[in-house]
Length: 90
Image (cartoon, rainbow, N blue to C red; front, side):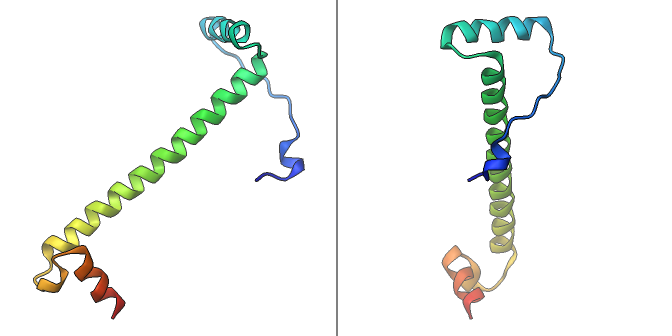
């Protein structure tokens, strides 16, 4: 979790296109939130999505590397994930 001092708010100035402000204002009415809350939640969702994307990309890269190892080894013990795990454990 976050420390109390990390949860303190700091004012940030930014410029957004008018159409985004209009859409944000629609959400403020629909969800009874203010602009800051809408923007904060949007940024949190974006950051979470980017972190998740990095995890999936890393997993995908690892799978491709593992597939390459399994496909290039001549040793029959390494033709499966279990064989590779057993080989690495020894």
